[in-house]
Image 1 (tube, rainbow, N blue to C red):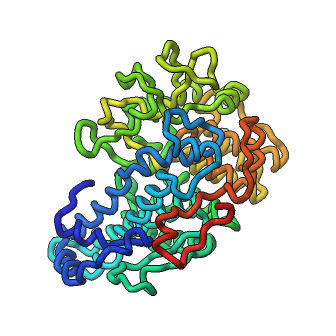
Image 2: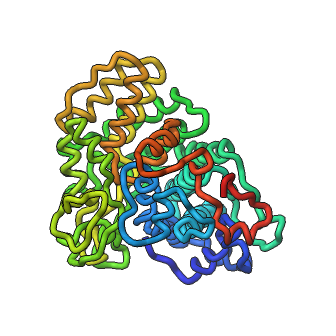
Length: 472
């Protein structure tokens, strides 16, 4: 992914979607014109856009935001910025919040560069079909970054054009509504539907299955869900014949089945290179990492109890590794038997080959089960839910009321997708985030203001058009 030519680095310095980047002097359009001339240039610009999936956000912070902020993990470690997130006491100068805003908007800016330029390239080494795919893949990437932003911050600036000016009226953008952001996400994905590769034989490339999968999620997560479209797009994935659940849940994480038939799209890493994944070193116990410092994202007692109460020994064993006789203590586990996330298992000395799965079939099956239930199709919903349950030796769900089945699906998503960065977003869209977090007995005082992050203070200082989120 990291094939960044010098010309592209110049161009990328101005491909921006937030004030933190927009205060830089723009490079002349002549530089961009000189770069975006060949098929190789187009591929390099797309490579730079994919490269943002290897940023710190997707290697580590996505799991803090999705699991530590929720009820699946404690912060662990010794980082005060993580503690703020865990305790719903986030300062506007929180370093995690600042860098995540920056990473996501830089990803958007790189996607904007592709979308603004690649369509104009007329070169013998760029076929029309490949040109179309590149544009579609960039549109998906922009949509995915905005999906993260809107779920973390709510209203944020919406930047969809290449910025080549430092004029205040151009660079100082106010926040857009969550409805407008989801409209843009869905618009980008509908564009991608007709442009990306229509086959799903490359799990490291955005293809038609990834587009339908993210469209299903967007229609489920937007302020007014459209369950008919969730069902329709999920069906395009589930019924395509291109994906199937692995027979063993553990195979998803053992390192021997990456890019499997269950995976829809995953970030590719290569151990021992500058494209390695250093995240597992921060999560795994000393027996797996060769060091002795306290690790991050400690699985919560509440999650462990949820696995045990469900009789879900298969996913408990595959998702969490317990270890004793450690050189530190944890007040949440006074017996000394401390849990660790175990879905990324190979630390390899900060140079792991473990891929990160961004979309997989079980996620979409459970979304479709939820859609079917919301549409009044209880039996069809249970068939889908039970496909996920039977794989882990759990009995079939027999709920007869929609409310009971909805609760069962939400629990199934928690047990199935733990440590994959989904839980906080799911809790919020269910409307149960506040009551769930405050009921944990950990002293949380969560209210509606705490459901979104603060706008980073450095962005507020740069952009007078930004309004701080309520409560910060």
